Image (cartoon, rainbow, N blue to C red; front, side, top):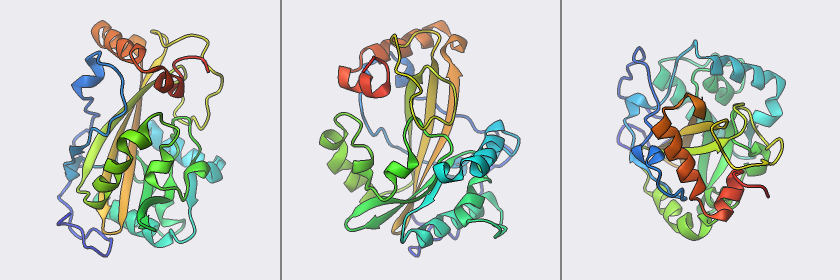
Length: 267
């Protein structure tokens, strides 16, 4: 990444258009009705579109509430992760054209500037490990369970991930340039903060469920990587009929083990 010094601090950003509303670009395949499969699906990232700084977005208010009420659930730094967390926090603030006030942990302060959850990965012991994060909108996973793990181990609950994507994931991170991808799922609950599934579904997804879309970005800083997650939730009932039908068909085509992991069939 030419604009980022290898020391880990990005010193020259392309100027973001902070007045232009950002939107999630949902790839056509989400609404194409194709079989739902595990894939990386990485695309080059235009750094001017990296983060959403909409200060009036209701998710910003919810994030601040969670950082007070559920701090231990949504914020963590692994031993040895302070330098990486601070470097990424300063990079986020620089991108936003802001200074961190210094009244709280740098990563927490950076997370209050944007709509995205912020995760920090560091290359340790020949693997990329999660060393710090502010994750206020987890999709049925616990931050405490993932801290310190390498990227492939983090995804071990995903059926087939290690076998299909374990080796490619390592290569991608070792040679990373800014990238983004879309991850989507269907949930029976629209809540943004979902560290666990409340109750197993009693029936497969239908029009009463919700489409949850995550815009995930990977931005490298030498031995650190910022992994950011912007989450949007839409009721399937609010989609057009063709899009709704296509998403439900895609979910219905998922292999049983993947559908079970997603919560689309009873365990």
